[in-house]
Image (cartoon, rainbow, N blue to C red):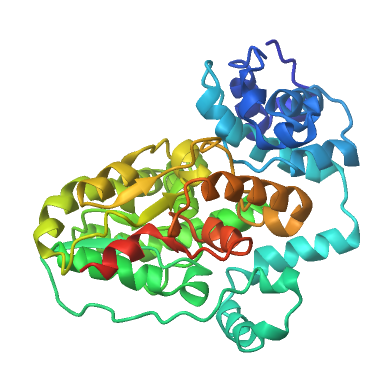
Length: 408
């Protein structure tokens, strides 16, 4: 693909980065077969190839419109297309650049701007926790659309107090402590049983994904730098990894090195952070032999655990099969959907709020495939997926680490 940048973008770093990505694209169309929005809408402009065409036009000087913006907004950034692409196109990076360029030229309606502002400022805010607590108190009175976003109050359980020579950092997350606090404490308990101490840096906050993907990329980078500053003393003291139990945060932190590559003050540190970051499932191969003899009871082999691998895990981080394989080694019966296990559930960060119609169609499609397994419980590895799927089923939906924690 030949791209001739307009003078406006030829001197810009993001324009040049987009041009480098576009050079890889040969428009073969393999990606359309695995794009969730193309599957639902059948519109070429709602698939990766069409969106690449729109972004290419903008880079070459064409004026974008609200329709251009709409097609880019409809993208879930699930990155399924990257898994499919034979040319290795970094579509996720490209769409971030494209959205930023289009938003600079196409103003949004006031109501849309207000919702996006509330999401990017409210979710990482210290006020989110108290607001969620209030929502949980009156949950039974809330309309269905709000009730779907407010999980029932959850007991966080005990946080281990033992100290160990082996230490890892863990990002608490911006919404997880308020919505499902047991995920973090269950993670700490499982790691404690394996002789690893979990450390949370109090000044580390949102991973930066919410603002970054809502086109406040400068705000997202500020949060990334703040996390690096909060973590660096612990890295200097020898923590062996930064563990992520939310795959959405994990894929973002693993890309700090890419996102801050042009920042002279943070580039080297960001690259080191990315290098140290691991999804919790990546620790399982070393944890399983230690945990096996410590199980208080053996898993019930008759209990079917359905596992939904989040897009941020299987496509963003390119981690596939690890959770199922290693839980099976401990005696669990874990199954993924037999059909479309690769497709997004529709959560995708703030997508379910901004594009509810498409989001719920994808949720119901995913739950339909999972229900064929007749699972006793559905598990996942990202709080957004867990909350979203739970809103459409009576089957319990939990983080896989909580299932393991219960047997210890």
